[in-house]
Length: 68
Image 1 (cartoon, helix red, strand yellow):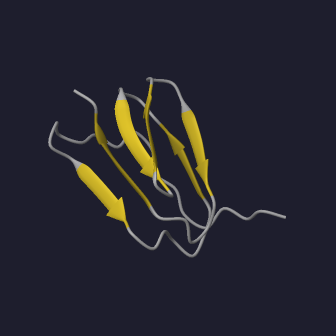
Image 2 (cartoon, helix red, strand yellow):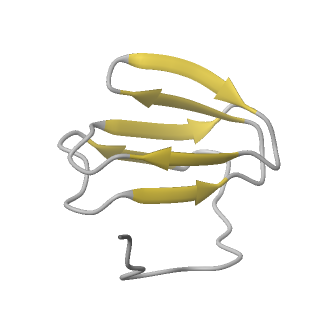
C-alpha cells in the first residue's frame, strides 16, 4: 500500500535549476514534468517531454535539470 506523505503543485524553476538526490529519498517519488528535462536515475540518463510522469523508487539516486 502507498501513502502520500507530501505534495506540491505548480512549482516553477528557473532555467538553471538542478536537483540532485545522490542517495534518493526514504520515500518513493512521483514527479509530473511540465518542461523538457534531462533526468539521470540510477546511472541511466534520458530526456523527458512535458506532460510526462516519473515514478522513482525509494533510495534510488536521481538528478534532473531543464533540457533547455
